[in-house]
Length: 228
Image: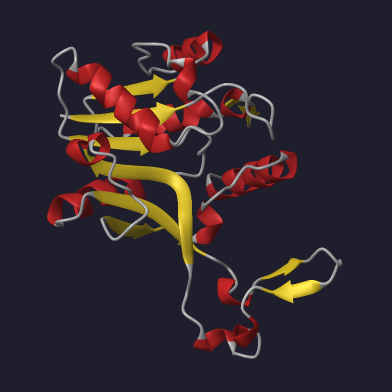
């Protein structure tokens, strides 16, 4: 048994109601729900939310919302893995058990089913606890800088500034698309961002990080281009 869990709390600070904001005419969460259902990977697709409004929209697009998430795990300090764990324990208490769970992010319209399926297939073949969508930084993070209190540029690592970019290791970050995992690993609170995870590399142009309205509009353009 496999479950898709889409965390979607209310109260986004950077983009108001981001998880249900219209994206090319439909609530952005509907894309994640549609992808999860169309993948045919899951026995059930649920949305974990603290909002009745989000719950109603999720149900409209085919997801289940078996509970309203408690406020204590619905603030901006709550980790995604805590939300997944809460959901799995909720089902276990009702004697419904899953072998694998997949966290699919709500604001995730560029997710492609081929990568979601690859994440599951690769996890099955491995001895890892998770498979995690990642993407590479477009510039070596080792050469990054910050602006100090004096207003001056300051390298994080001075020794790396003189190194050629091709001599530095490629760096990756969480693509914010999905985390496949064995249910016992989520329940034991094992950290996915670790050697316990199998990396599923997503091309950077298929990854969106929606921090502001500019990001949102840019992603709409990318989506239309990819799906034309």
